[in-house]
Amino acid sequence: MKPAMPGPTRQPRGATILVVIILLAVMLLGALALAKMTEASTLSTGNSTYRETSLQASEIGLNEAFARLRALPPDDENTSTGGWYFAQVQVQDANGMPQVNFDAAPLIEVGNYRVNYVVERVCSVAAVTEPLRECLVKAIKVPESRIDSDDKLFPPNSRQYRATVRVTGPKNTTIFIQSLLTKG
Image 1 (cartoon, rainbow, N blue to C red):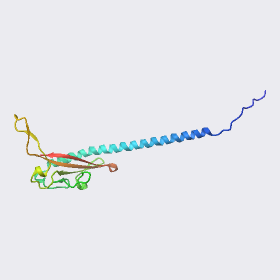
Image 2: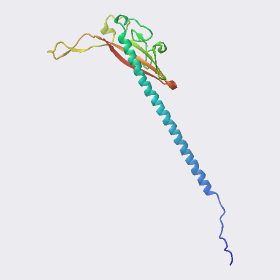
Image 3: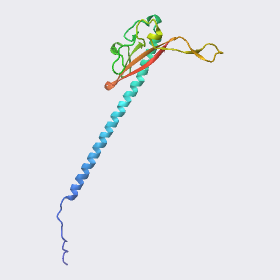
Image 4: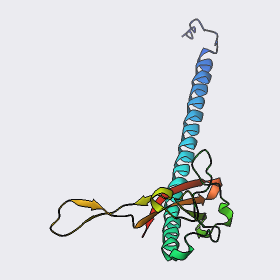
């Protein structure tokens, strides 16, 4: 018996390895893009968490500002006190925030967050003589009698104040919250 003659042989050209290298490069680029998207998503989620936590911490500052405002005697309302209360509206920046030293304002620590607040009486002058012209006031509708059904506006007995709360947190997260408060 004679051994079988092998058929014509081809020379390897390396086309398969070239296709495999190209596919690996495409898969590597896809994996890198996916990793970058995951990183961006994680950072975005972290930033949202910092912002939401800052907003929750600002509520504590707002509640504290309101409590201190309610405790402020009426005789002291014409005098700015303690770096937290101003008898008239302060100069504002382009964003509407008062240009005051928030570092001198009362500080509340809420976890890793620092909460400072200031309260301004919404008046154009410190010594108020005509509240209707010099201040923002809230008129309350009160019926004159139980029989009278039309609501009448009585002279204002509620004064308006603007509280501004600054919250500083991790990674230099800083937010400002403003709210109108009513006293009286």
